[in-house]
Every structure is written in structure tokens, then in C-alpha cells.
Length: 226
Length: 201
Image 1 (tube, each protein chain N blue to C red):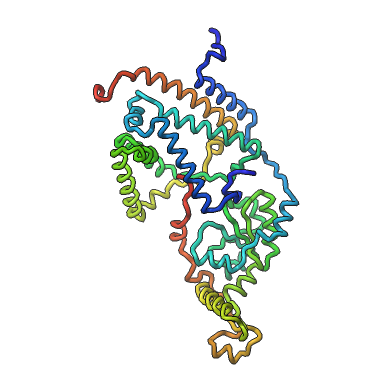
Image 2 (tube, rainbow over the protein chains, first blue to last red; image 1 turned 45 degrees about the vertical axis):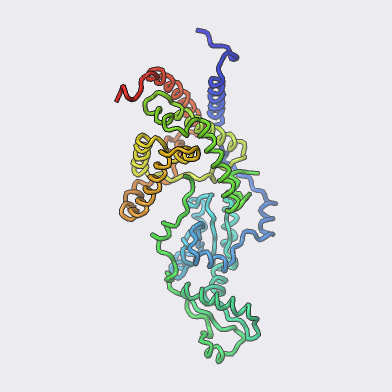
């Protein structure tokens, strides 16, 4: 039996032949993506310079209050520190466990550590593994505590806009189980009359009431695909 | 520029809606051009008289698969950023059977019913009313069926992972499967060409 000549084949048969040829090519190639990863130092350096990889505590707090579920918040501190206090929604992951973690590359990942050094190092690890959307919480847990949980009241000479902004962050601080505190410069007496605590109190318990419950959180996950 | 464009931030949430609209219109146009705005054409599939649905769908699968494989191989698409629906084995088997039963009874699947409404088919409008009602019922019943709907969760699975085969081999086998399927579809069509559903209830 002789094979039909190529120009006698119908259009569909030619397409089928093309598909088989491409399939054979795939068979030879094996895996579509190679295991080696090249790091573009200039690109990484430009990201560091441009500070595009930062999330401020204010932004993160607003995300959590708004119930956003489109990011993963990773706490890189020790288990003991995590148990004592962590930002709502945060999951703990040791920096050594990053390589084998279940973080997916199509997720937005926000990293934080005590002050930011560990998160910066973890940022590099994940960037080197081609995670495109990794962010560092600016100033780490320290700045989160100072800005979000115990925001400082503005000085006497503050503008109305600053006072309005403070009223808002004071409200938010309560949802995170904290409280506003008096400005370091102002007198303790005036702080007492304003109902502010003069010094930061202890960090709130692990689960402030504002944190969404896991069941509600799961229901909010945005579905992709059809 | 690397794809997926959305994940690499080429456009934001708002622009993505415009992109989705354009792709949706193009998808609907292709379905309509393939004749899938007609319930008669679609249901002929289940009597093996016209296997166009099978051919179009399998051709789409093979085209998308080969395209993604080669674009990834030359580094234009980062496959690890492409969304993969998580697998819930038994809920999805039951869901597939329900969809199939609805397809046979109503004559449309969800996408084709929208296409058929666009060309003014009343039965498709009834179908869409059914879809909306179904969404409402599922939404209301969700708390009582969550246990089943979230059972047998297997995570994000791909065929190469399940069978421990190189992706290229799976691509090749799917191409062979498609060509075998197209040949089989032709055989079925020739055998059932002249039988109408009324003669063979």
C-alpha cells in the first residue's frame, strides 16, 4: 500500500499531519520549561532601587480590613514570636522552608519579619526562583506595630487633614486590637485628658476580632477560569 | 514581553474586563460560525449523526495544548503562572454528569445557549433561565452541600504529574488520541448518518 501524495491530502488531513509533527517535536523536547533559572541582576537591582516591591503597613492594614484574600501574608519569624503575636491572616514559614513551601508563583506574596532584614533576604530567594509578585512589608512588624496597632497622635500644631487621618487610623487600630497613643512630645497630662495612653501597651492577643474567620475567608477567594 | 500578560502586569483589573469582553465576543463568534447556535446541530452529537461538537472541542484542546507547549518551550509563556483549576474528583464527576444530562435534555451547554440567544433562539432563553435558577439553588443550598463539594480535593493536578510522564509525551499522546477520535467520529457518522432519532427512540 502506497501512501497518498501530500498535495492530494485534504486540508484537514494536512492539519492532522502538522499536529502529529508538532506532537513528535514535543516528544523530543520533553519538558516545556527548563529547570535552570537565570537571574537578571540589573532587573532585580532596578526593583530594589524603585522600591516597587514594598507594601506599607497602612496599605496592608487597609487590605486586611477590606477583607481582601488575593494575597498570602508570610511571617518569617520564629514559632515562639509568631505564637505571641502575628498580623491577622499571616501564616508562619521559616526562611529555610521557603524552597519547599506551597507558595505558588501565581500568588501575590507579602513577606514580613521583625524589622525587615529577613524579609528582604527571603524576597531575593523567591525572586531568584522567579516568583513575580513578592512584596516586603516596609519596616517589618516594628513599623506595623508603631503605625497600625499603636498609631501616634499628631502634635498640637497638626493640620486638620492630619487630624482626620489620625482619627481614621485610631479607628483602625481598635479593629486590630490596639489603641492610639500620645505623641512622644506632648505632655502626659494632655494625653490623659484626650483619653490616650501615654506609652504603648502590650501587643494585642493573637486573633483580634476584626480578622475574618477561615470559613468566611475561603468563601471570598476569587474564582478564576470558567 | 512574557505571558500571561495579566500576571506580568501588562494591564490591570479594569483593562482585563475589556480584554475578557473581546475574547468572549471572539469565542461566541467562533461557536456561532461552527454552527453551535443550533440545538439541532448540538444534539445530533448524541445520536452520532454529526460529530462537529466533538471535533471543534478536541481541535481547540490540541491547538491550545500545542500552542502553550511551544510558547513555553521558547520562553514566551511562564506555565507556572497559568491558573489551573484545583481538582475535586467526585464532585467534578457528578457535576460533569449533571452538565451532560442538561446538555442532552436542553440541547445547549451554557456557552452555546448564550450564543443561541444572541441569534434569537427562544429555547436557549429558557435554558439560560434554567442556568440562573440553578445558580440560585446552588447558592442557597451551598452550606448543606459544602461537605461533598469540597471532598476528594486533589489540588492542582496535571496529566504529566498524575502519570509521571514527561509533558512532551503527554502532548504527543493527546494528539494521537485526537486523531484517533476524529477517525472514530467519521466512522460513527457514516454508520448513523441516515437514522433519525424518531426511528430509534
